[in-house]
Length: 110
Image (cartoon, rainbow, N blue to C red; front, side):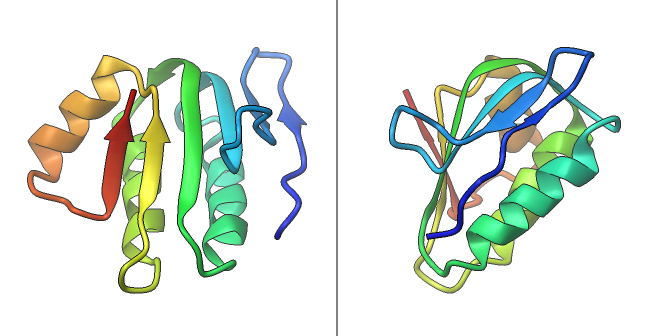
């Protein structure tokens, strides 16, 4: 398993290993400022070749670019693998439904 290193920002966002059993937990706002950090972490997790679980309970904002980053990570996964988004904010489900209806590689769980 790839070790996820915690990344913090003075702006209040955090990407960290999840104590809740997910591969990674996100906290704060996700947009252009931290998109590259999110891409790097997701790429490392996807490289493992198994499902990726992202705890989004602490996410207060995610722009279209952040959701696109999650979708691209899911689309780069091997066949049969999924990206599970645990407790995503409503805006994430809305963006996914509007921009990627029927996308089956991303699972939303409560």
